[in-house]
Image (cartoon, rainbow, N blue to C red; front, side, top):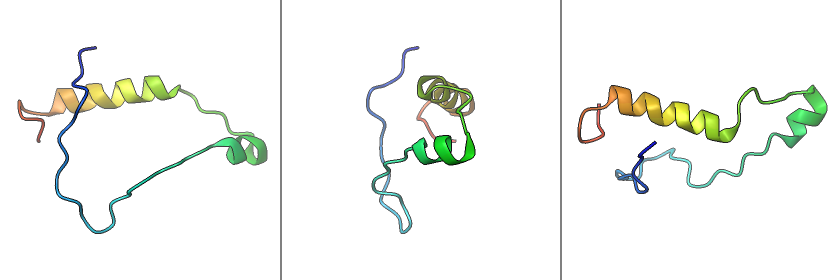
Length: 60
């Protein structure tokens, strides 16, 4: 998939998440939770969605 390596960022807004260090290890252990897809699969689906719903400048 040919995806740009850099995406434009807009202005920062109140409530924007600055950093995210998610880890599902605790859910794996306590809830017997397992992810259905890999991170790469999820990212590919997300990119494909935005490419299919965006106009040429990357905005809807």
